[in-house]
Image 1 (cartoon, rainbow, N blue to C red):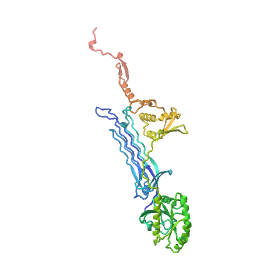
Image 2: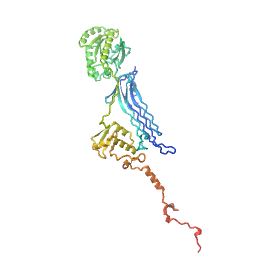
Image 3: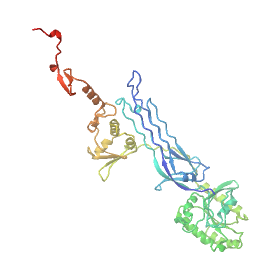
Image 4: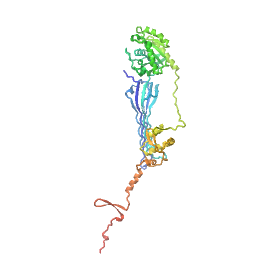
Length: 498
């Protein structure tokens, strides 16, 4: 028997964006041909799409971990990284997407409905894309943005027009098997039906679907039996049908008491008060079943119910029931508002929206929040001074520094943006070009000698004064002598006889 799964928890991880590349073009006669680092590729996203051929969440039950591929890193010669492959997950019609806290993210109804549940990270820009009139050859690139990661709960709520509810062994499965092509399991013991069954019924020109919900018992709305697990499947139904067992004397139950118990559970679950209801007195082919049905039918009609006496075995009364259901469903469809075509909703940015907010927490840290500023911080390589200076310039142009000053921030106060916390230092003027990967405005914090300083030191060590020599003695010691102390070589021509 195929396993039915209507609730799963998915562990989703979208792909990370690829890092940008730092590269300088080098070729013959052009040792410094300009930056040519490519951009990183975008990470793959995860999208849910409704497929009418899928009826259960079983595949996700066995494979709950889903991860999209990462974007490729950029390369030299202006080569961009490859984008990660998007994942498309097929789900049944009526799937509800929730967060781990129970917040509804999407309600997927209708074939082809899609929802991007996890977005892939953006790829970082290479230094070729970051070059401008001031930074002609950037010595840094942006890092790739991490992809979304979350735990998503998928719940399946069957999309059916009619829902059959009742106690176990009331004959719901037998009823749906004779009015539709559904073939549920049928046996003479309670809780035979362990999963909802869907059937399509044709009545004249009307076609509607019927859902057989597993048997309910008192306390189902609080988790007893199978009710809490499958009550969600009747939330979308247009009509509720109470299937009562007319052979109740044989099992020592009263049909009216069964109806009151089920109505109490439906009221406890909530949201079903306005649904039209019909009552079916089943099993009238059993001895004394017809007599009991004739006895309780007036009481049910006095409560305002339309009552039908049927037998799933002899099929007595089924035609009247089917056409009554078709009429009720058609009336409900007419009363529903006409579906409107989906429209593109444009939400323009407010005039006074700066794109970020600043608050000071209890510890005195100034917390800056905003999608743009947090993305900038995630894409910054804090091991590169030039990249840090570039971030400071972007925050300054956005107005973050001015806003921090208005909030009372002083130099050295802690500031947190996203997951990064640092001591705030006001921007020390405009950017001045220097060695790649450095920013002279951060010199006080950078004690590492620059490449130019190291080159000058090597040249100084190689140069020796013309008036100094290294003299090695026979014992191996080295002494320095000046030109004045140099020994004079005397030849034979300089010797004189006396």
